[in-house]
Length: 157
Image: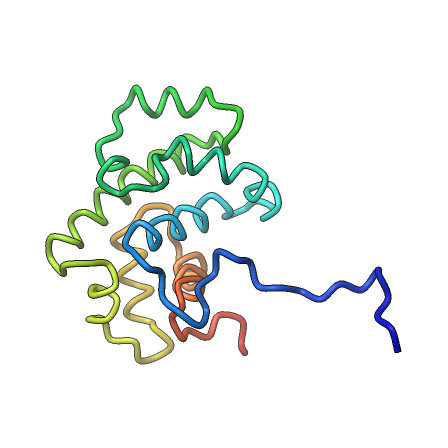
C-alpha cells in the first residue's frame, strides 16, 4: 500500500542531537538559544529566521556574544531578519556570560552536564539550568536537554 502524499512522517529536526552530543560548547549554546527563541512561537517561524539569527549572533560564538553591549541589543532589535524580542535577546547575552563561567569552572559545558546528578529524570539538572540561565523554565530546560542528546523523558515516552 502506497503512503498518501497528505500523510507525512514526522522527522526529528536536524539540529537535535539525539544519538550523539553536540560537538562543541558553541553548539550546546546554539541549541539553548534556539529553544529560547522558539518558546511560545511556531517552530517554523524560528526555522525561517535561523540563518540570519546565527549570523547576527556571530554563529553563537560564546565569547563574542558574551561581550555584546546595549548597542548590540539595539542593533538586533532593528533587524527584521530575526525574532526581535528584547527579553530573549538580553537572555541570550546573559546566558553566553553564564556559559563562560561554566567553562571556567568545569572546563566545558559537556563536563558540567556530565558532573550533574541525572537521577529522578534529571530533576536536579533541570532545576540548576532554570536557576542558572535566563528564559529557561522547567519545560524549556527539559526540551533543551533532550535536544542535546541527554536521556531525559520529556513527553512521557
